[in-house]
Amino acid sequence: MLILGRVLLGVGVGFANQAVPLYLSEMAPPRYRGAINNGFQFSIGIGALSANLINYGTEKIKGGWGWRISLAMAAVPATILTIGAIFLPETPSSLIQLSDDTERAKLMLQRVRGTENVQAELDDLIKASSISKTVEHPFKNIMKRKYRPQLVMAIAIPFFQQVTGINVIAFYAPILFRTIGLGESASLMSSVVTGIVGTGSTFISMLLVDKSRQKSIALYLVVCRCFCHR
Image (cartoon, rainbow, N blue to C red; front, side, top):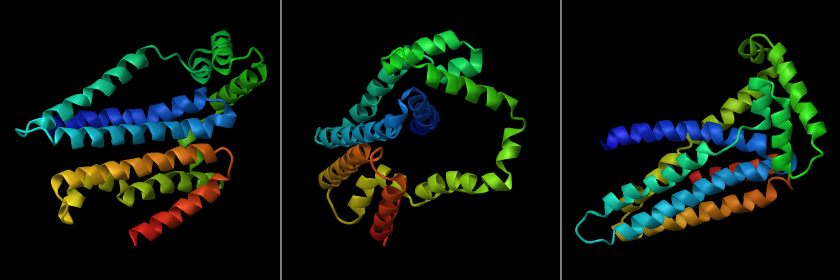
């Protein structure tokens, strides 16, 4: 049952990790797009930190059944997310691409931007949609030599980020701490501390990402990660 649940959870997380950043990017004002996308990662950090706190608290329950509460609590945010998604409006970009409904797209832009002066952005969306519809064989085109650097980096950056094993370390942190000699309660508390550091770092990056050079931030973080893995 736990394995099946984990499979279904993986499907849900996989779809959400692709759909949510795209939705946020299409809804966010360009000047705040980086910070709002980082807000997605910040929310993940808060969720992981909350889960670690719940695990730490339920471990104190006598009788060994606290893990049931820990698993059941995960249904609360999942339910909120599911209900909230029902009421989410379509993005202006999707309204133009899928139904050519420029009037609804304009109204949505005015709503999310808080101003009626959105014609320039609407024209850009309409132009981009028109150009995308004229492109034939997009996957074949992206393999061309002139797009190769962007394609390689778009694949390599997330690939190598995952290969570093950071998710494994984050998911199984309590077990890793147990293997180095910490007790059960101390291992869970160490995971809480790790979650606090990660969430705090994400919050700081939210403040910097739209005001600094993203390349400089990325290089700094890569150096830190190399040093830590050593």
